Length: 218
Image (cartoon, rainbow, N blue to C red; front, side):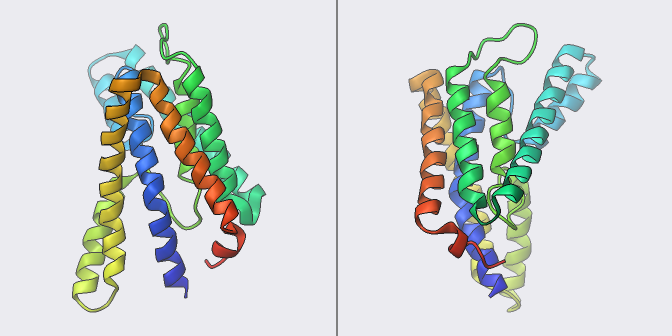
């Protein structure tokens, strides 16, 4: 039963991965080539900036990491306070932050643009939306889990659904990023309305479906 619950939550995370990919693509195109949800990439860029003696760029990238971590901490705190209503509450906050980012300026001075101060924490919080699903925006982990689950299934020691959901998560990231880039080139900053609405609809859908009951199994 616990395995069924874990697999079900993993499938529920797939559309959230698409939201993360969409926002990341918009952020990359609009915020001077900054990842807003992919902190592995941001950390690599931070290392490059340090090695190349670019203190301003390094400070900017370091702040992105801190904002993401802060959003994750806030999301975890909200998740604990919300209890059984964890997913709708956290996703509602993600939607609100993305809506704020939509209205904030994407043009900054020497530091991060104001928009980033809402977009990045939103992506940190997104990772806390579902219990037992770590790293919604960390799809490198999905690929490694796919490899492990595939071999386990082929050996007859696991279910094929376990590797299928991991490859679906990777495909969702690519699809979300493709959609985000397409929307940004046609709508500009207004492209953020789409993932904000998607997060709001996900929150409303989980609440209407009775998330406390459907999400109780751990």
